Length: 513
Picture 1: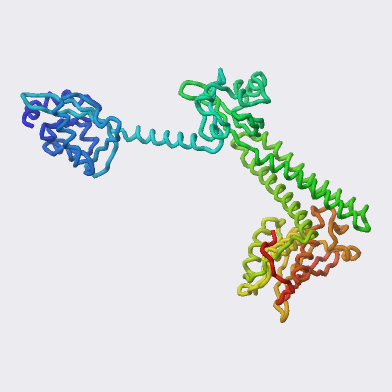
Picture 2: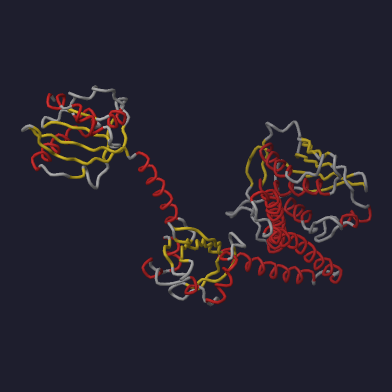
């Protein structure tokens, strides 16, 4: 200690020009000298560390082993990097721990042994390492396939675990391949033409669908998102691959389902006296109800491809909403067709149980609010909060949804739809009242016929199936559906639910879908 005090000017002159923290300890592990970088790093003032044990700068959890390591190091008297291969921490005066890197240098002065430690605060480096590790983990663990390949040679440079798992090749095998090797339907000339907009900087990103071939020879459809990136000073391609097998299977299944149901419905119509008229109505229905939303979907998809700039997000969102709504509408139509088939085949099972009516009404009105036209509103019944009902919940939800959706569809803007609930001695009565276009008197006798649509409703979307399905389900459970209507003034649809159901639940194990 006295030695360094006598030579403090020399030590200060040599150490203050060093950016690393310098801490010198004697053989008893007492701090004898520090430079300003070390004091600033650990949060101490001038001369505040001198004379304190080295453990002052080391987290307490390492105190039990650290002294032995230093003694062993002094004995060997060799220069080395401290805690190589392990994380090393220091502790500031305020108790805060932080990662450090330290190099130890033993030396002798006037017959005494000392150790000089060069200490570097590596907090920023560790933070960057953690961030890089986090992104590397996301890259590697992504379930989507991610490929990085060279701009010139097209050789794969890095491939994540998701890609290796799906494509069937190991990383060692893939780095010997190019994208052309896993695309059986595209040769190198076609591929380079495909990526030319990126190379020519006319596009920042391209997206396309193609086929990939696994190591075992099996093929699967994919959607490719490709862009240029940088790996250090090397320009590379980054490809994110989506396996769209399920999407393709769904499309094929959807097409087969439509084809199958169309055939079944055509055969059913053959049994009716008015075969030709019903067949014409059905074909017109399918053509209109599927073609219109599909055309909207196709138009929106085409326009989406043109809105590539960030500031065009609102336009993209608008078309995404259109696609979502049209797909939901198509799904509703298909569910109606499926429901018709189950009713005709007698495969419908019901689950009668007790539930609060307010819960079901809340859910139906919540969904219906999404469909309201400008200024329309639904008036909620005020007397049902404590009302329990014994019925099939899914059936009643289907019926109410159908009636309220129709009321919205056939009512003008700035009009109200009223829902009333009346409890009578032997039944519960639900009424949906609108002030819409009404039903012409001559059409009223056909309103519950399957595929029938009133003359004044032909310009609105609809299948003519909903009311027929609702009425059949209610009658299967001993309930009923009736209505009153006057053209251009509105309609009232009335659901009568008997308190004692004439429905046997013996041997029933499934619920209605």
